[in-house]
Length: 265
Image (cartoon, rainbow, N blue to C red; front, side, top):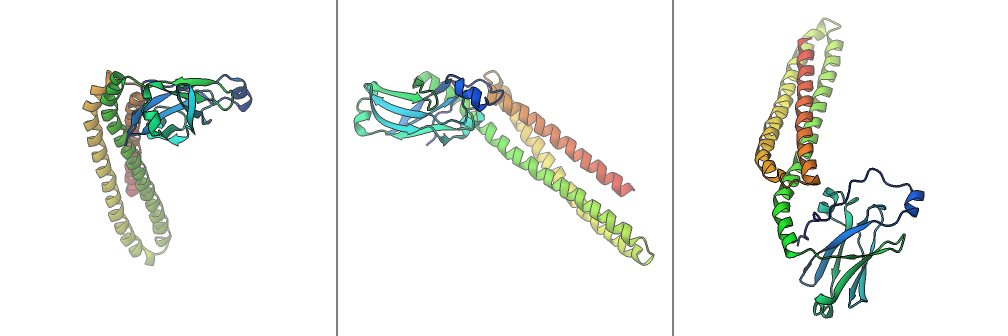
């Protein structure tokens, strides 16, 4: 089961977490909502912008009478991606049967444990949920692929570091061997073996870059389609894709220049 994404009521960017003394004097800035009721289970999220690490209390009321309570402390990837603190501000509640029979009298109240301030959480309209679904499905795929690209970029960096380290060790061994005539032949063989290994590693980097570029190209059309409705996570995705492509290209060029320079020397 996937709860509706938190896109309608997007929080403002947080420049910094308030100091404990300052946070204690701030009024709660509670933001959240009920996402959906599926079967007998209620889903939602809520947080205090002024206290992003605090978990809020959530009360379920029928006709003003409390019947259930929980804490909004469950992690959700969509919340984290949308800048809702650390993303662990979701809640899920199993509703008793009698509550389901009085949904029209249902209300959800979020309470700040620090200030006692309360805020009623609303349920999005059908039109809002339909609009979110239309946006979040392709956006979710882009962000999922972005996670894959980030992992691949890290792997590329590891390959490059291994290649540079192997080259450094080879240079040290060759220098030691070539200090006497008997070691020159062994040094030549070591260089040949090292060149073959470095060629393989460079090929791995080239394959990664080809796949990386192809994946980025596949994203271009999808990103253009989403740009007219782009929000903060979409802009973040586009920025990260651009940054990753620049980093991948720059780091690979640097490694290749180092390899060529060392081999030429």
